[in-house]
Length: 248
Image (spheres, helix red, strand yellow):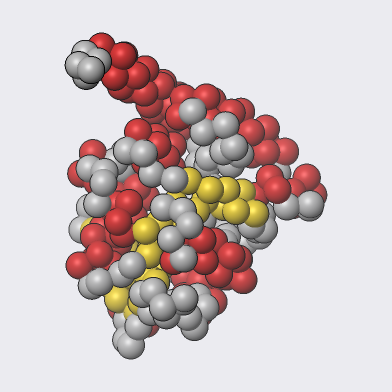
């Protein structure tokens, strides 16, 4: 436990046989349960996850590839059914430094915020560690997401290193969360529209042996999700303005 709360970590994994064991081994001891979700991998990911599924490690598998967002939703549901108070996400490619998890989780387990999101751009070595193309694209998408959601302090919308309160997940429709790349933008949008509090927390940018699944053609999809959030926020504001004032 951390701060008296049951903290779970979801590990979405697709073809991560090289790095999955390292990822799981690095999850801090204060995490109560680790939920590994294999998204129909065609390598040895499932076998490794099954072998590690003892004690605090649970294993779930999608028989068909459904996407990273869908994998996280599967993990969220497992964790909520098991009584988690807060749920983190650490991808199976060891790209999220385990020493940053406590900093992310504490504001959530203390009840200060509903959703804590990693911010790699706040790290002093981001220019050296993060590839230039990812840095430029990430900053642009973050600015657009911030404008669409009205979250002026949002700085790294694409970072998947997060911790969320179970109470916040109960306020949104997980069935409609975008299932593939772009889910961080969609989730932030849903939470903002639901009135949940969101905070950026500095984390280390980690790049090494992992192979990114993000491709240039994912950008139009993400832009579409951002535009949809902006439209929904505008529609919500119009509906509020259209409501009759209470009689005095």
